[in-house]
Structures are given as structure tokens and as C-alpha cells.
Length: 316
Image (cartoon, rainbow, N blue to C red; front, side, top):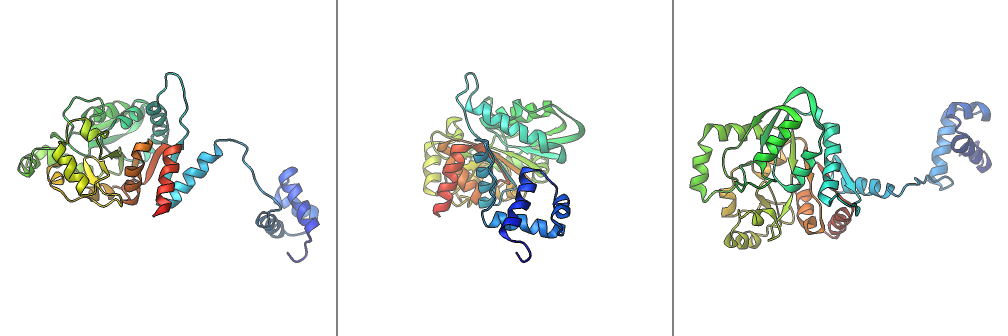
């Protein structure tokens, strides 16, 4: 830098970083402009004369969050380190992280749509009660109808107990016998009305599940062996609200899709702010596919899942 030698640059850095002098103060001490001080500090960083180290082991999580968000063009990523804590499961730890995020942002939204899943239940249980403006809460699909504690009907009610809101239920099973049965449900005014409201929501809370025999669609008894075989043959690796997608995030075309009562993946994608909450190595494939399909804008997950997703994502 013309006018400043290395010694002068080092002095500027010492005054700024060690003595905590402001740039204006340094300019007066050195007899140069504040702009020259700023340029000297920047050049010192660029040349490696000065490096900044954050002395906290959790800084690695921040690096992962930024890498994940940059790789998949997310608005934000929330990554936590799961710990062996007596009496606190991984679900509960992820639930706390998801709840902290939603407590921070939820007041900015009016119409909140919700999917189903055990992880979402743990998030909702840990959310603060939020007063203020009235919200609308609406299901993204019909219910599992199994009485499970992760069913969307129950989660919708639970969320309404945390947030002052008007409720819209999709009074239908998530998956019905055939297209004709689905059409009957879609003729019902309340079903059509709720799905219309869901399509106009500005915040969606989403679970992401695998198409496997460890996935909730299978475990809840919504998927038969024939369904499973057909979806796997179609390339399905994951599902959101019962809607299936392949490893690249493309919707899977199958007879299964004709039986799902709920928003389509394209409709979900059009919701302005979509928060996906999912974790676990067994879900890394379907989380990666959901990110590729742009079905989430914010992802809440754990460190190991993030590393797996980033590693797989870089291989393509």
C-alpha cells in the first residue's frame, strides 16, 4: 500500500486489535486518513498478517450452518451437536433447536401450515406461548387416522394451544383407497377450503421422511407392500406430507400420488417460508433430496446429518 510500509501496517493492526482503538483514533495517531486505516486492516487480513480465531468449539457448527445454507441456497440452517444427556433424547434436543428458531421468527407470519411427524411434535411441545396478533393454523394434508401422537390433527391442535389462532382441519385421511375416493373427499367444502388456505400459507412446518420400512408412512400402516415396491421402483427416496420425491427432488409419478389428500409438492414449494426439521443418518438421503427439490428454505438438523448431506451433495 503506497505511503505505508509493513511496520506501519503492523502498528495499525496492533492499535486496532490489541489496544481496541477505533479507526478514527488510529488515523489521528498515525496522521493518515481513516480510509487508509481501513485499507491497511483489510490488506493485513488478506496477506495473513492478521487472522481471527473464535475460541469456542461450537464455531464448527456455525461453519457447517453457513456451508449448508450456501450449498443449497437456504435462508438459514440450524445445526446442533447431539449429546449424551441423561433424560434428554435426540428428538428432544432437536425439538429445542426447532422451537428456538420458531420462537424467533413466527411472529412475522400469519398463516402457518403444518405437516406431521414425531420431530415436529417435539418442536411444538417446546415452543413458547405466543400472544399478540391472531394467526391461522392449517393442515397441509389429511390425517394418518391412526391415533399416533405425531398425527397432523393432534399437532395442529397442540400448536393452536401455543399460538392464538383460527384452525383449519383437512377432514380426510392422508392416503385413501383410490382416486375415486379422493375425489369424493375433495368435493367436501371444508376439505377444499382448508387446502385452499394451506396453499396460501406463508410459513410451513415440515417433517421429512424416508421411503423405507423404517419410515413413518410404513410404520403407520399407510403404505402396503405393493405401494412400497411401486414407489421404490419409481425412484422414491423421501416424502413430505405423503408426497414422494426421488434422489434429485423430483416428484415421483405413481398411483400413490392419486391417493394422497393434501397439497402437492409444487404447491408446498410455492409457500414463501418452509422450515424442514429432520435428523439422523438414516434420513440423510431424503433430506438431501428435499434440499435439491427446494422444498425447504430453512433446515433444522444435527451435526452428523449435516456432514453426511454435504458430503453426498458434493459428490454429484
